[in-house]
Figure (cartoon, rainbow, N blue to C red):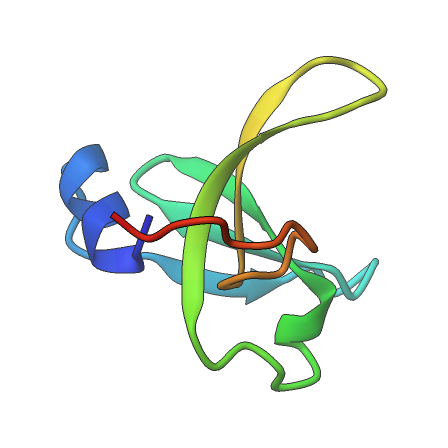
Length: 80
């Protein structure tokens, strides 16, 4: 979903991308919750940001990730 759609769904006014000073990894904050951010963000490679709910293959945990639209490698079969 777009960032605006995500903010509306989560009933928040803003999302903030922050960087952990110890690890260098970025994350985003929405309300009192956090989500993951693609490594491409720090390199300025996010020009069309979207937020997806993803599942960790290791733990099965669900979380939100901010990434470049179309970053998943799956071909688009249709836009409806």
